[in-house]
Amino acid sequence: MDAFTAGLLQRIRTTESDLSRARDEGDDFLVEVEQAELDDLRRLAAEHGVEVGVSRA
Image: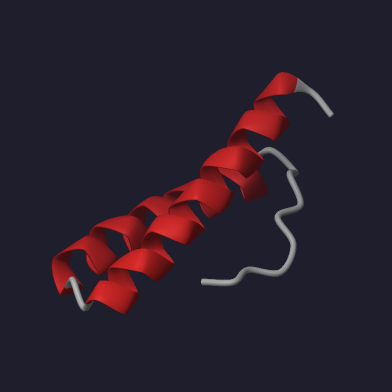
């Protein structure tokens, strides 16, 4: 796995975790921010052929 793929997958995992935490805390604004970030990261992964797998978020 190259550095780009590893970094992208790590950012996705981190963002999924942050999104889950925001949901647990009831922070609607942060949920929207983290969801938008996750959507962008998943789009970037798809554009570069990076398989993300099953999401927890």
